[in-house]
Image (tube, rainbow over all chains, first blue to last red; front, side):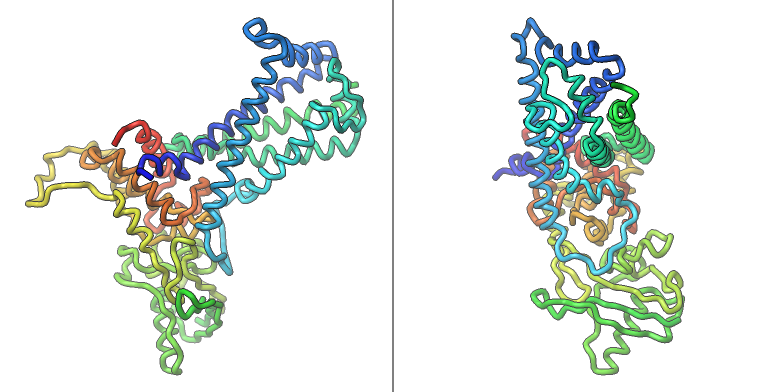
Length: 229
Length: 251
């Protein structure tokens, strides 16, 4: 292999792929959160938005219902690339780490980076579950699958205590994963140019993690407490 | 002061190692950590035991030869407020009666040779791949013939401070040598002399880094926290920027 080929296949490039796909997924989460907040605008508004997203977005450039599939394929591609690079990097780390220490003290390592890989794996399971509930309608606790009325699915599901609790844990894992991921993505892409940018990127990471947690939990909590029905 | 040492003993690279406990009663707080290990070895030799093997050379904190993990941190960096190597860590930073674990650097790319000595030639492979500038030999050029902007010269110097001790790798949960590689990349990339080979250098050094068995960087930051020469974490971002730019160059 030439040096160029080795450099293209290096850990640094795999990290860059993880950074870019990760940021795409953060962007998707922000959009998803915004959509969920429409629960507060009432059933008509919420359902109109959901159906527009699934059928009419980018129409007439694309035929009805095409956008959502192209978008899903794009997101799945991002997840697959993110996961593939993560697995290859983990493999390199396990080899690089060698024999474990008898005693090890860590000062810089945060909770979110310590559990980053495990939370990432858990998230795949939780996201699959989420899709089985609201997208395919395979598993429907507290609601009936209705393509035309996603509002009733949202409200029905979050009135079930354990769905609400599991969702809280799910979002907590997402936000911890994102806390390190956000800062790490920008650093990997070269944005960490000095101590002040390190601080800024870390603060932004906390901000976005907190924003997403609050933004996703707010409508779900409102439904659970019966403020929105 | 009295201390209890738990030292990693391993007869050779293929042997199975384990922690052995030793007690020392007359340790002076003015001793350096290595002087304390010398004292242990004198004691062991007098009693007919095998002395503990460890690396050391200048004992002034500038050569990069020494380095062990003390109480879980490389060079015992989390024990004292001073950024320096094992040889300049003094016993006064430990409490009387302390139990101190001493282990070698642990990384896939740094196999243990004996006891606390590890083989760090993986670093040499990275430097050989491109951590230099090609210059004709002869008399030294006039220092001011190639001016370098002050802030870039400072940044280059901060990174040229790296002594290649390997603490960054020892502290990294991924066994990554990125801070070491980034220090050399950043050192040369900020000086006029480093420009002709800038793109080929970063590609070759990153390829060598991955090739010798170091893990990837996860931006944890333990490396910069234990670095006895305070090589900053942002050097890794410079390496990344240079690598991405180099991928679009044909050199």
